[in-house]
Image 1 (spheres, rainbow, N blue to C red):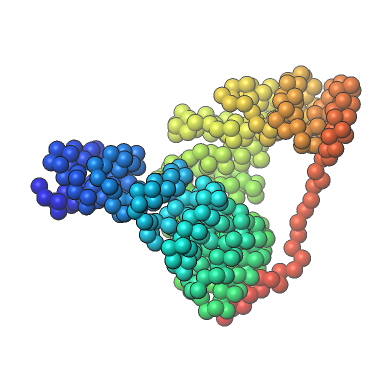
Image 2 (image 1 turned 60 degrees about the vertical axis):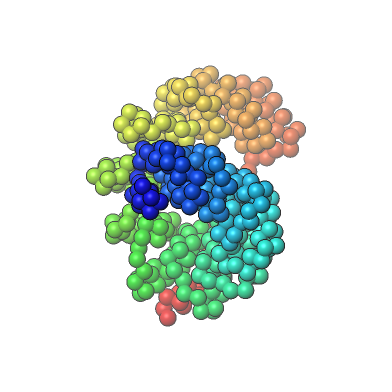
Length: 462
């Protein structure tokens, strides 16, 4: 069997079993020593079984080619353990093989995903030293990396120093501003982009719609929607989901539903977000209907969706439904409850005044309850005047977990007062005073002037 035939088999491989058979053949025929075939095997294996690809890479009898290095680094950068890509990059350089313009973006992306700005800056310096400072692919990845690490000053510096900017550069900046909590700067960047005669694409609008959601700016959102329609942009899962979220956040839930049902390309995120939006608007029957439509649509609910529907049941007082979905999670769909799911159930039962049942949920948790669950439970005890000593140990645990949060002391002191434990209440107030803690005041945010996003309306009208 020659290398061309083996390469054809590799292209047709779909399972780990296929790969293992081919690997066995390569070992038996000593073709594993062929650098080209070994590199091709690693390349195809990365998309099927990263552990197998990594094992084959680590046991190569010869120095891996740059193509093999890039394949394994790229796959780890995309995986749940991106830091491994950074380690492989360092190992590659120690062999004396120089990374190329494809290697650097993979590693920079890994630094961003793992939040390692120190390593990211180091890779940035190396890229500049080898003359890749003007490479737009490297520059765009650097912008996203610095934004992901929360340092938008560096991202802006990279953007300003780029000789040529494409739509990816502008969209990366807009997305970075939104992710870092600067939605008005995102709109200003969009305005500059249009002045530079750069045409926006679907990725650009996903970020801008997210900015509209943050600002609760329906006028800008509607203008973007008009632009999408006028320019016949395809409403894929990402763009459609961003659009329905914008309408929901701006109070137009019927419009959100209209967008949702008009989407041909709905993914699990679309369904999950729609469930959450309906719950936020108190549409309990629609939440349950939507959940029941998922399986016929060929989608299996995941952990995030169950968090959404349990939260919806809690806010809408659907106790029986909440119990049913919680039980279905593991028994029907094999989704193991997390801290968030237990927290939703405690909140659901606490709101309904079922304090003892909520307490049993906390006791059956395989992990220690977090501060959110504890506050929810103790708050429910207070709201329903439940003076049974269920929450004493939990109040102590809450203060132990978050000793510097003033609202925890206020909650515990109020509970002690309700049960006439005046000495305990006075001691809690005293400790709070000694630490200089205060309960954070509530606040609201309203839009006063939307002039900074008027450019969107002008673009849509033009």
